[in-house]
Length: 72
Length: 215
Picture (tube, one colour):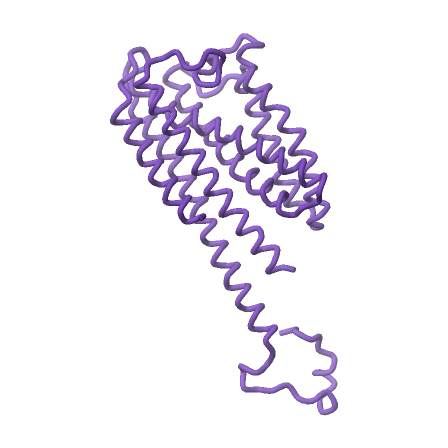
């Protein structure tokens, strides 16, 4: 029977490609979650880092008063 | 721990490749195309293990409502689907030069195709339901029911007349072939088991991080 090396290469190549794709996908998702976690932590720390303190509730404009807390 | 598993699986896969191409002999009747078995058989057995873990974790989830069990089931489902899909594909690639066809609706191939479709359905079900608790509950039931197909896949070659040969490794009396074929098979089987453990641990960690980030 002929050796059919092309079939062997296809089977191993396909397996390697799919496993590599999944591994890279896990890495990408991990990086996305790390960014999301960092942003959430920064937001929950309050408005001190921007240099623009939020006005006191009594001095806010109507537009500012209607804003939901934490909305961009 | 996850990092160690990652390096361990990479090393085991590399040794498996050396065994498959450097140590295992050219098979007398099939020629070198038989080397596909060193990836096909471990993929299928590792997928059985992944779906078995999924079923046990699903049962634990239904009893205790522990989200950790659900995350293990979810991760195992993803990896199991990938492994069984690759197992079907590599089997099909082996089948063309050996049987003369890419696919035939014999009992083993049909039951394994049903297994694949059921677990793709499991992942779709999880993705389609917004309420995570409800998704976990429904998926757990489906995961347990779908696992009933695993013994059907395994014993199909005994119960029906099939083109697919009987098992080589998981059979009464054990492996009867040459040790030069057995060892590469076993090394690759261990390599894919470690790979499953590594990918599952990493996916579980990611699912926990996703749950915490969106909470």
